[in-house]
Length: 261
Length: 282
Ligand SMILES: Nc1ncnc2c1ncn2[C@@H]1O[C@H](COP(=O)(O)OP(=O)(O)O)[C@@H](O)[C@H]1O
Ligand SMILES: [Mg+2]
Image (cartoon, rainbow over all chains, first blue to last red; front, side, top):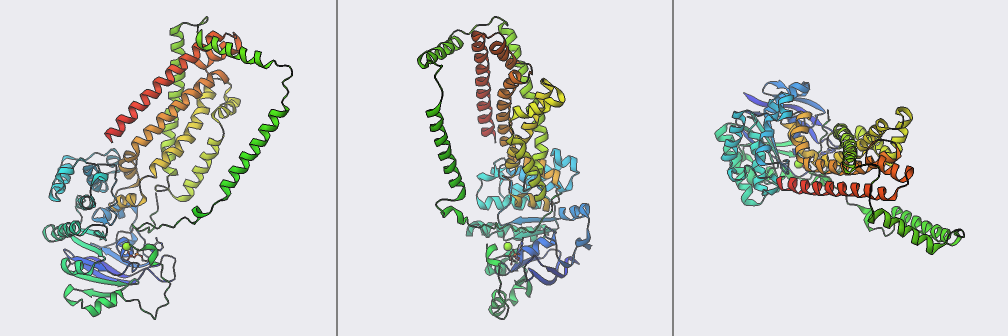
């Protein structure tokens, strides 16, 4: 059964060209899907539409059979607890410790009051520690996050997502600001989270070779249009060139550079 | 409560083109002001009417007054313990206004922080608060005295009012230290606004909040002294007022000044200690 289903999703910010143009695809449980495309092609927008950090202009997004687009505030919160997210810039609270940052992933599962007071159960703490250990951060549990290296910060980011017990994790260029060896560590962890924990992952990537090596399926975006969707084996250099092509026939008012990463 | 627009994790940055300009409007305004001030000062000094005053004698008298104040402190009207008690009252005034101000400013600060509240709201609060801060505390006390009568009630309300404005600005800027993208990341896990505020925003700015609050406490202490003298609020300031304006007793003025100085130093030392301990802990 499809865990996630996008139907004709379109997103206009205010520019002339849409950031996402009639995007449709579905993702099955346990898949590891990568989204590739040049900068400004709409990868971030696509990922953020899924948990409604960005509101799609039109189209329908269903997660686990629930149509996300129509949910009220409370139900949206419920859905978001099942979707983890990790970022290129990690987005951790720098002045707080590793364990505190990881436990933040539990807030969505709590009542407002329990969350405000920071009342975590024993099981929650235990689970957080176990995940931290699994990611090889046991030496850093009580260290402040601004003392960590980039690779370690990203592992905290992954731990924060995992402690949510998510069905799906969205990863927005998680290795774009890491050195090659940390990048490899992170990708290995993500791969095993998919294979061993059965979590579905959607990851946007800059590097085609990483997508080819690690993921089960690749979606190619070009100016918000899905121009490729298939297993790595089908991504010929011809098709890859299409994904990164700057079609000359389009009028090119490209604001993408502003957002280059 | 906050609407999440699609700001990417990437930061948009626009280079500041103004820095290259040699003389912008602000610099020009400053120079003009300084020039005008210099001219008026020279003019005033040249045309001052000092005929009735014997300058050397005036200077000597001033020095002797200062000597009486600072080298012969003595009290006729209160004992050391009474003085101490008066200081405690002044401290109480400072404590109360800082506490009220801090609690109210905490909430206003959240609503004024750009990463936590909609832009229109932050703009409204920041402008109101800027206006309140532009008027000195003592004036606010006098304004409230119209309704409450001169005395400690007006002092508490007026000082609280100004503290709220001061701390709202300071707090909101501390809150803004936490990137909007971090807050969004937490909202994306399903956490709600209050949880994010209490579990991420406030803990990560706690040291700054405490430092600002203590700084304001020091300000409120000196304000409270002034209120005692000027607005008839009780405390050591009132003794200073009585000594200088009523009894005209310079020895007593000196003693009160030393009392205030001693406490100001104690506060300063405590503040420094507390801050360094917090920094180590954080
Ligand atoms: N908050 C925003 N407001 C306006 N336009 C945006 C915003 N975020 C992204 N865009 C535009 O949408 C397009 C897709 O951007 P994005 O999804 O960030 O692409 P990618 O992640 O692939 O680099 C770009 O043209 C970008 O300029
Ligand atoms: Mg992006």
